Image 1 (cartoon, rainbow over the protein chains, first blue to last red):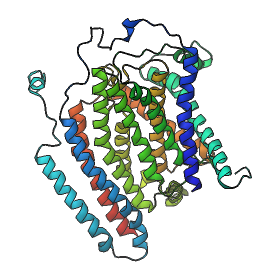
Image 2 (image 1 turned 90 degrees about the horizontal axis):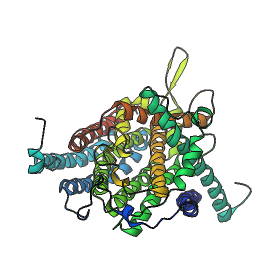
Image 3 (image 1 turned 45 degrees about the vertical axis):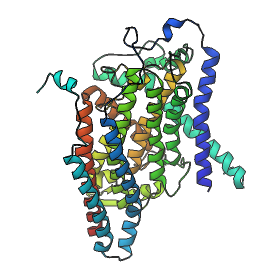
Image 4 (image 1 turned 45 degrees about the horizontal axis):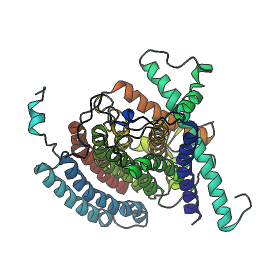
Length: 135
Length: 336
C-alpha cells in the first residue's frame, strides 16, 4: 500500500512541475495581441483548408493488429512470472512450456494470415506510386 | 521514514522522495537539453558549439531557461483548446512518473511494487497519447502527420519492446525491480580471478540488441525519429507549440530518453551495480551512456522512411522478439 502512496506522490509532483512552469511563464511573458502571427504554419504559405483531413487507412490497420498483440502480451506476462518458480518446484518442462507454445502458435497463425492478406504491408496511394523516384 | 508513522508519514516521505527524484531528473534534463546535446553533436560534426557564456558554455542552461520561459505564447487559429493545453502536461507527466519504480541505487528507490516492470512500461506508454493530442489539436497538417506517425511507431515497436522485457522476466522469475537487480548481481562466470556478473545484457546480448532498437523507436530517436522528422514535416507534432509549452514538450521528450535508458540499465545492465563507485553514480552513468548512444545515432544513422520503418517493426522485430521469448523459455527450462 505504501508503495502506491509514493507513486501517487510522484504523480502529484509530476503534474505540479508543468503547472508551476506554466504559471512562472505566464508571469514573465509578454502578450502582444496581433492576429497575423496566429495563422497556422504551412511553411510560409497562406494556410489552405483545415487539418482534419482524410489520412492513410494503414494507420487503422496497424492499430487493429496492435490490439490483438497487446492483449496477448498481457496474457504472456503472468506465465513469464510463474515459469521459473514452477520449474524450480519440479513441474516438468513440457507441462509449463506446451500450453504457452500452443497459445503462441495460434497467434503466429494469425500473424501469418494478416501478413499474407497484406495487413502489415504499407499501401501506397496511386499518386505516391507515380511520384516514386526509385525502383 | 523521518519517524512518521501511518498514512501521513507515507505521504510526507513519498512527497520528499518524489521531489528528490523529480529534481534529479529536471537537473539532468537541463544539462542534457541546452548544453550536452549541442556539445555532443558539435563533437561529432567537428565544431565547438556553445562556449561563450560561463565555463564551457555551461551558463547557457540558465540563459536558455530564462529565454524560453519569457517567450510569448502564440495560440494559432483553430486549435482544440483543452487538448492543446493538456498535451505538454501529459507528456511530461508520463515520462516523470515512470521513475517511481526505478531503483537508482544508494537507497534512492521511491516505490517497489511487485508489478514494477509492468508499471514502468504502462507509464511510459501514456506519452504517445499526449503526442496524438498535440498532433490532432494543433490544426496543422504537419502536426497531424507527426501525431499519426508517433502512434504508428509506438504501437509497432511497443510489442517487441515488452516481449523482449518479458524474456528478462522469464530469467528473473519476478516483476519486482529490486528483485530483477538482485538476480543480476549473482556471478555468471569467474574468469582469471575476475567475476563477471549475471547481467542480462551479458547473458542474452541478442535480447539487449532488440530491446535497445525497440527502445529507440519507442522514445522516437534517430533513426526512428519519424514523429518529428525535421526535414520532412517541419517539427511534427510540436510545430505549433511555442514558449513554455514547447519547453514542456522538449522536457518530456528528454526525460523519456532518460527513462528509456533507466529501464535498459535496470533490466539489462545490472541497475546500480558496479565496482568502486557508489551505486547511484553507476546508475547515472548508465543512463547517460544510453543518452550518448541516442546522440551518436542522431549524428551517424539516416532516418528510415515510414513504410520501411513499419515493415521492419511488424515483419522483423515482432518475429525476432517472439523467437527470442521462445528460445529464452527453452534455455531457462534446460538450465534450471
